[in-house]
Image (cartoon, rainbow, N blue to C red):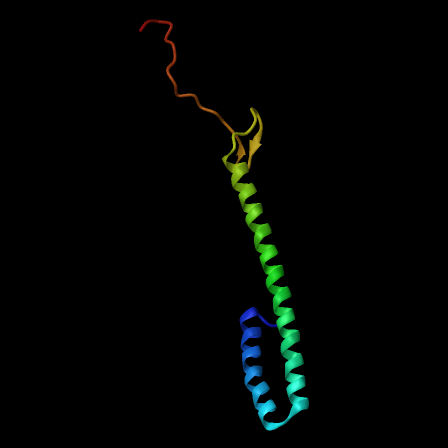
Length: 98
């Protein structure tokens, strides 16, 4: 199994062999190398497409998590951090005097 970088490196190396085979008249070797390069490029395209889809899904999941964390939970409900306790530090009335 290759990483994207390793796959690109192997394609670049095969390109040197491809032209060497063509110039030397090794047409069977040229066809073999060309076929290998095409299959590697197809695999690279598929891998990059799958990586992009996985990253897009991860981004959407993280956006949803941030939205849930930033939204106000329902009274008595729970949030990602557990139960919510609301403290009201606003002005209060003092019945004994002012």
